Structure formats: structure tokens, C-alpha cells
Image 1 (cartoon, rainbow, N blue to C red):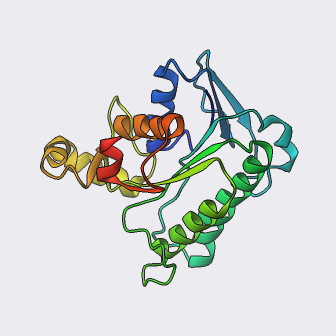
Image 2 (image 1 turned 180 degrees about the vertical axis):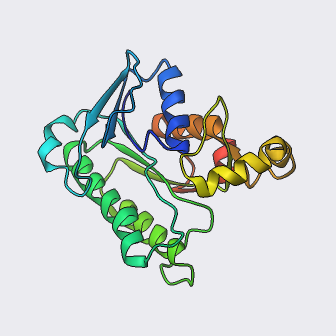
Length: 219
């Protein structure tokens, strides 16, 4: 299986990349980045691309894939809806529309978030925008598309969030996160479990298009 990955430098993306590189069924991982991460592996190839709103110039390099793991995202804290939508919706759809054209048998797996608003009419700005993005992806003619909505994600294997807003709570709660996972399995997952679940969905499918933390943990 050949995988294309967006957001490899983020906490979720790091976890997904790790599981892809460990999976014997994954023969190649192409990571789309704005600047090199410096990571090297026999399976890994990085494509440096500056304009994430337009992938037409690298279109020829975006074919021949079985799955896309889209882990790119930002916190909505302090952002206007217009700016948050531009990053969350516009970049995702720019990539997705190119990928579906070049890979008609591709499975798209998108990292969304618990509380996403599928109606697109709720009061929480970020949830509306995530809902708009999910709905737009589900309308595209992919072989399959899955929207992953994790709640609390416990980072494993030395993985850390690059976002300071998230890093401080993780540092404070770090010792109790494994306990939270045991106490609240429906709301807590790990970077390892999340990555493996995304691979399972890409290889064998999932029971429904929108998966919450409990669904993710059951894959």
C-alpha cells in the first residue's frame, strides 16, 4: 500500500507516520511538507511544496496512491472564522480535489475532532468549519472516506505536540493520561492506536464514515 501523508510534523501526524513506517503492508509513504523534517527512512519520501492552496504544479507526483492520511490542522484559538476556514477547509479541499482526480481508488482518512458539527449551523465556530470540511470530503468520489473524531489523544513513543497551547496541558496531565485512558476509553485514544486505526480503515474499511474515539479504539 502506498500512502500520502499531510501534517507529518504535528503530534497526530508523527504518530501516523510512525505506524506507517512500521507496517509491513505499507510499501511507501510520501509526506507533503512546506520544509523538510530531516527524517529519513527507506519507505519515506518528502515532497517540499510551498503553496498548500494549489497543488497543480506537483499533480504528476500525486498519483498512484491507495490512501491519504490528512492530519494537517491548527487550533482555532484567537483566529477569525475566515482565517480558520481558509486553513482548515480550503487547504484540505485543495489537496482532496487534486488527489481524487489523480487517484480514483483512493481512501481518504481525515483527522477531525470530537464535537464536530455536521449540521454546519452550531454556535462553535471551529465545529462548524470542521463539519463543512467533513461534509465536503464525503461528497467527493473517493473509493472511501472516513472522518476520524478523536477526543483526548495520549502521545506515545516520545511524540510531542508542536502547539504550545496543547503542549502545556500535556506536560501537566502527562502522568495521569494513561489512567484517563483506562477510566474513559470512549473519549481517550493514543497516537499509536489512532495511527493503527487509520491504517485499518484504509486497508479493510470501517463500519461507518464518521468515527468517534470509541470507534477508533475498536478498529
